Length: 111
Length: 155
Image (cartoon, rainbow over all chains, first blue to last red; front, top):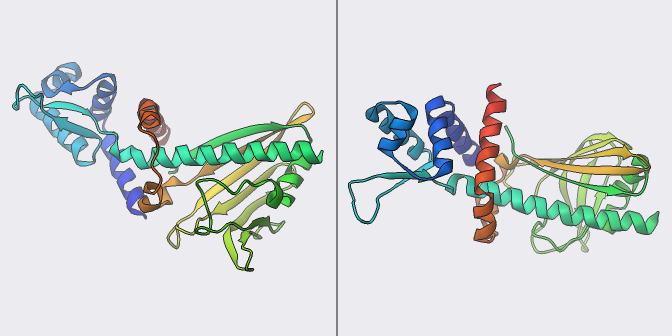
């Protein structure tokens, strides 16, 4: 299995938990503080912290601090793990769009 | 588990004829100037050996033949599946292309599905930068796709 496939498996394993999936859905709306995430999912803060650590470990979620308070942790989606996939999809889509347009033109010429 | 790209086009001919032109004439219609090259820096002529197990090749001007992949399904007028490997792929790394030909009235819908991103090496994918705007615009969509895929997996 390639390195990337292993990474993807880890990503999907992290997402197999319904609480972590809920966290991802909430973070798709906007970044949240850990406390807010605990509140909105109905979990205790220590449990939420464990889930956030797991999501951070596989690079799904990134942690940052607001500039005014280093003690506050803000969580947001980390786009990096999906970047390579996105790029491949973009490039492959562009390739086939070009080629199928060329194919259609050729069909019109020879028909 | 794989990722996939799906692109389709409608052509004014029958599925049988579209399949024939797609395979027999690929050297004539394929546009070489794209991001993807099978062989590094050189462009050759593409060809299908017209049967299951046949090769899909690029032949360079000096006569060198590069095997892009093997033909896995060869159903004239209906369906074509072949392996797709670029020169930068490691041995054992492979993606797959499926082309279907569907009658729509007197025309044909030709649909290409390209799968198997999981086996493409990072180094290769990372070689081409794409504008940040596209990246950001698609961000939400990819998450949605990822979650949808997970749902499918769990179903």
